[in-house]
Image (cartoon, rainbow, N blue to C red; front, side, top):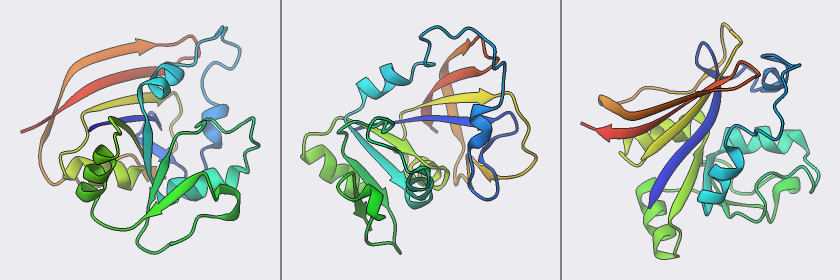
Length: 186
């Protein structure tokens, strides 16, 4: 099964403030830029994946947003949340996510056996874990023009050297830029 990352970071590499907030995503960059219908490739990416695997902190952040059904950006996509401590989803995410505790290699095999072909991997610790298990095939990282100075980093400790290849870069009118990499496990 193909596993891909689509995530935004501050220019200094953080995915959230120390308290888990991502409100800076909506206040950074050129707010007056004419983006037209540009969504920085998010819909095309979402159309390419058929399931999502995220970490518990990512789930908590989404739960705290209290999204209405119209704001829910994942549609009917099956979402699996990794947690060894939390066994049930928050009330506002019940029926939208399934909790999983166990080996991530086994999870990807089970999902592939169910017919899933392309997983969206989200959350810093989850992404790091998938990289450390040589499971990520590509990463799309959008850099947001803001320096947070501290926060939750995109990557934790990577246990081996990885080579990022086939780089594609794109800039947007709002001063965000995006880099897409293939991951080569040396």
